[in-house]
Amino acid sequence: MDNRVVDCHSELKRLRDLQYESDFNDKFQESELFRRKAEHIQNLINEGVEFIPNF
Image (cartoon, helix red, strand yellow):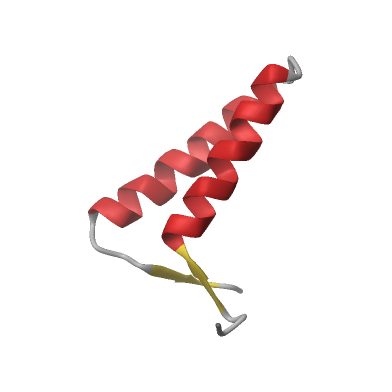
């Protein structure tokens, strides 16, 4: 896979895992940050975007 792009589905899973881990460890501000990032990626997926560039 090209390292200049990121698969949206993989990124969503990574962010959700980080969100749940932060929530479990009582790091609520960090959890909220990952939740917002995951929601953004989910919106991109809903719009049909499969890959995002790595800038």
